[in-house]
Structures are given as C-alpha cells and as structure tokens.
Length: 75
Image (tube, rainbow, N blue to C red; front, top):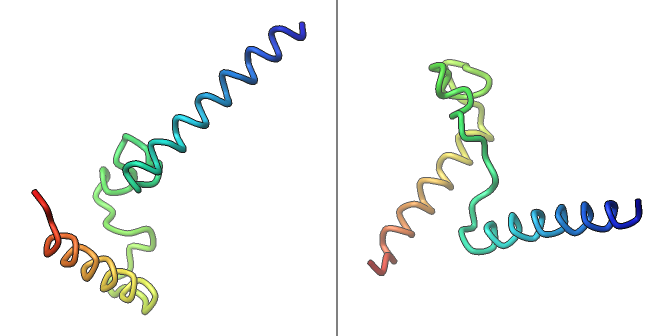
C-alpha cells in the first residue's frame, strides 16, 4: 500500500514539475485547449458594449507590451 502511495506521489510531483518547467520556459499561463468563451462568440467575460476602466488599462498595457516585444524581436 505504501509503494502505491509513493509511486502516485512521485507521478504527481513529476507532472507538477513539468508544468512548472513549461511555465518558466514559455512564460505563458496554463490555459484550456477548447478556446473558452471566444469559441462561442463571446469576446470578453462580461460581454459589455464598453469595457470597464480596469480592462481598458489592461488592454493598453498588453498592447504596449506587444509593441515592445515586436520592437526587440531577435528573429
């Protein structure tokens, strides 16, 4: 019984370490593969006609980050 527990614990530890390593290398958060709400035509979670101020700031920050990434692109 203890052998099964140890083997299961090691398996989950390796899976967790693999996900952590993937995050450290790619700097992308874990996400679902189905596309989420965008796959059914919903652009954002609240589906409001006008985004809130926090969302506008986040969108501006993401756009500025994308510009910087394109500007300093190596390949």
